[in-house]
Amino acid sequence: MNNLTPPFTLETAIQKTRMAEDSWNSRDPQRVSLVYSEDCYWRNRSEFITGRQEIVSLLTRKWAKELDYRLIKELWSFTDNRIAVRFAYEWRDDSGNWFRSYGNENWEFADDGLMQRRFASINDMPIKEEERKFHWPLGTRPADHPSLSELGL
Image (cartoon, rainbow, N blue to C red; front, side, top):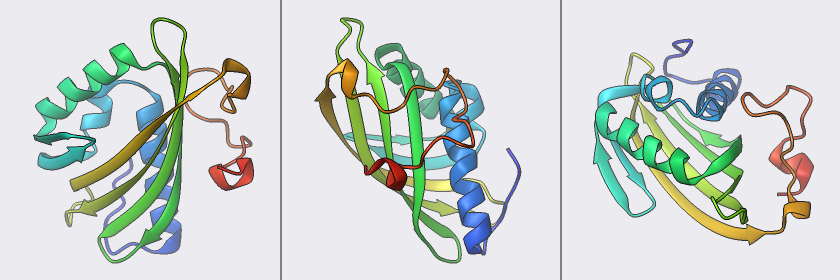
């Protein structure tokens, strides 16, 4: 991941947000963990974790359960070394039930550009397969795919 460092500008905050989205859409826990500091602190739903190894463990469990995962993140706000995003992702369970998960994340970055704190609040909403809005092939969202705002989410 490109090492964009604080203080953030609108352009670099948007870049940082999209790079995080692309990383998460890889569904590769090891790759995702590398954008966080060695001692990064997370609150993710009801879990509190510290460090890259715990991040890898959480994401491994997550993507074993959340199949066909596709995510869109959108910049909400930023300041010197903090970025707030909103996001939605779609996934299905192993019984074929589809969900759209909505959430907000608050990020704090160290001087080297690695994320040192991540606070995520996430809610899951069951959806019907025909209600899905994220249909690109697994992996990075195409540049011309609508944003959350464009999709009315």
